[in-house]
Image (tube, rainbow, N blue to C red; front, side, top):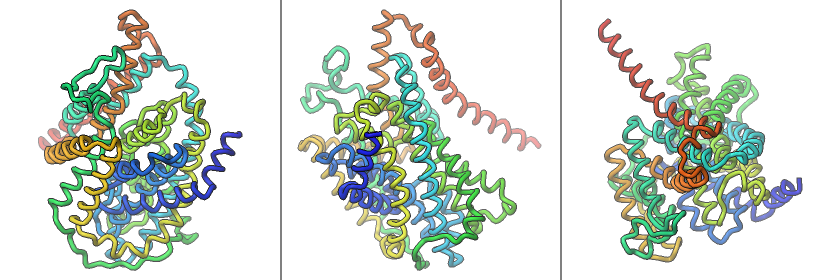
Length: 499
């Protein structure tokens, strides 16, 4: 109980409230500007948290994470340009409402649904994280290896339309993770005699390059943004009691769907928003209204988007396994402070853990007020050209890369990863498996080799442990289910063509 009170003291201190407000405001803007999103936003903000206490640093970053998930809906509703990938479902009915002169209603529905979804996801995190962490203490090296493998295979199979591309991207990330000093033997690997590589490739360097710099290249290539004739007026976003009666069940169901799918590694808002949207359409009395400006078509995906934040944080905090690219970035932020997420963190840093758990709930409340105050300015902020956004991203990326170790080598490495990321985008190769495999590489390798050392080279240890066997089976299923779905789809198409 004392750790909870200490966490509240951190959250409600002047510095804590400032982190909540600043993180929420920056997150909304980052999410609303197309091409950024929570992963890039957190990546760019991490260098400014080096000298902050871990509790305030994580409070700032999780506030940005939650707010950015909502921010993506702003540009989706006003410009039919989703700021984040999950907001694509919101754009269907949201932009239709804008064209009908109902932009304020759409933004109000989005903001309120996001806040409720965030609260339900945060409540799930509060309830499930600690019990799951207690179970995780029973995990041995073999079980941790299988957990890491499950997280990697899930993301590889779900992050792209091509399973092969996802697996190749994951393998590439694992290869990058092997650069540096061997964690078991202490022998340098793949450093080619370069002293800067003895510590491995800094996670933040690769992250900034693959996400931020590559996006800057893409935005610069696109030139100026398309002009839009609609300039909606927006004001304070508050739903009426009648709207709550109509949309309440949709928001709650979307929040539950988002929380459950957010827990699964590799699923996240990209899938949860569409599942929630389809579920809402199927249970609607007027399903034909969807796509034509139906408020439930905005409430369903937006509640699911923000609920996935709390869901994705559950495996991160309890098992140390990131459930999404954004939570992978948060792992990097914890590592920079000398911490590693997992069940031990609950015992070693209880104040930090409770600050994150309760801070996520407080962020959902702060999001309503900050989001409401920012609504009137979207009419002109979202008209910035892509070239201006690209220059801003590039400057902050280079600054963050250099600040990591004060080495120009890291700046050059960031540019190299930026070029690589730009090429990968051209070939539609997903970058999420690369980032997650870099994070999970250490977990997988060290526990794999430790398990073999403890078993004297007996590979049976991976199947004799019930927990290890469970996650190995889940890993196989995560690879086979997409293949089975594609085969079933092909058979169905062939049958329809024959008919």
